[in-house]
Length: 55
Image (cartoon, rainbow, N blue to C red):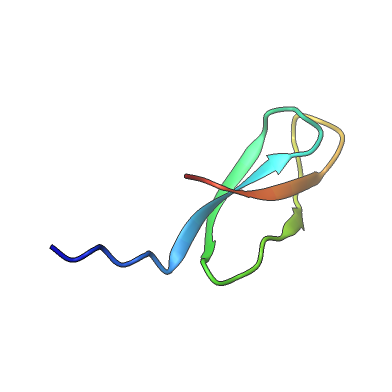
């Protein structure tokens, strides 16, 4: 059997940098570079989040 093709989109997780445990998940293109986004964190006071891979 042939190997399965890699998916064009990957799941990414935006983790709160305020260490509240809050996160967003979304899909992004595999070829796009890692990025940081500014999203609202309803639990903490900081809003910055970082992009990590979901395996």
